[in-house]
Length: 146
Image (tube, rainbow, N blue to C red; front, side):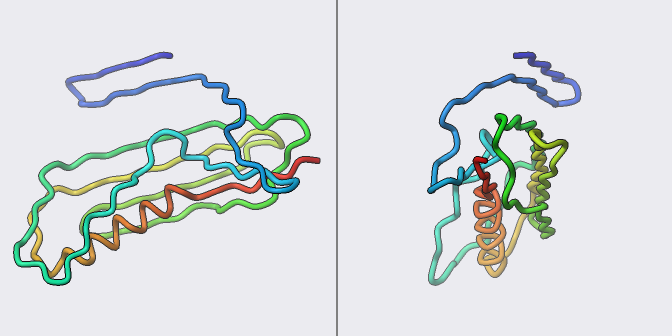
């Protein structure tokens, strides 16, 4: 693992080489793989029937992830999304999956959260924004074993 922590630019960069057996789940002759291995958004804010107070996102941040996935011989991509893009006043999200070669995929993801004060009426839209990101972070690739 190579870790570079640039405290002046507030950037942490990690290059990690990982080998994982049984990472994909099997479904018949297919393998289901979730390419976002390490940095998934899993938290959806609670739903309120009636919200009484405005809310504040106290911290802005930007996550940029890139994974190169090497497939074993005899495994081919059967189906995958090309990627998605979301723009909102709360932030943005963009993911992309591309096939670099027969056995190499590249998954990239940029997630930006904006800091700010928002009205109680904006809360439902904020919750929907987060729900979309949780769903997109679970994107799957279907692989077929030849």
